[in-house]
Length: 110
Image (cartoon, rainbow, N blue to C red; front, top):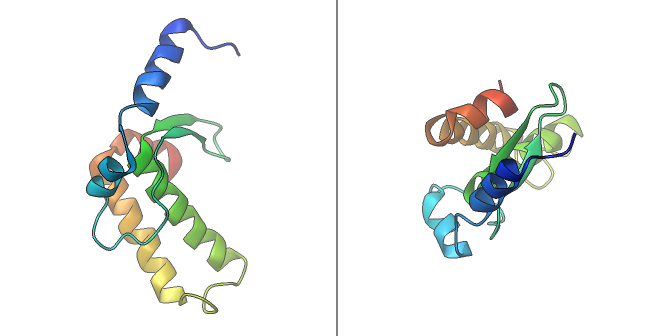
């Protein structure tokens, strides 16, 4: 489906909301140990098909949570990082999302 001009403008505004990596780093909690992105992006829930525009900090956290989920699912947890650490990342990351962007949390994780 073709995006309307308004949707394109909203996307551009959301993706450019953070002017640099430092802005994203400041929004993330002190326990965050993942890669910090400079730009946000649109993310699709693989089960529902719903999409959400995430800013750089949100995308960084989303990728960390999904990486922890994937490590557990593939049996990699316990080799580089413990299963307990992966579970903590998943729970803390989802809690962070629920506070920062409840709409994205509901569409991506619930």
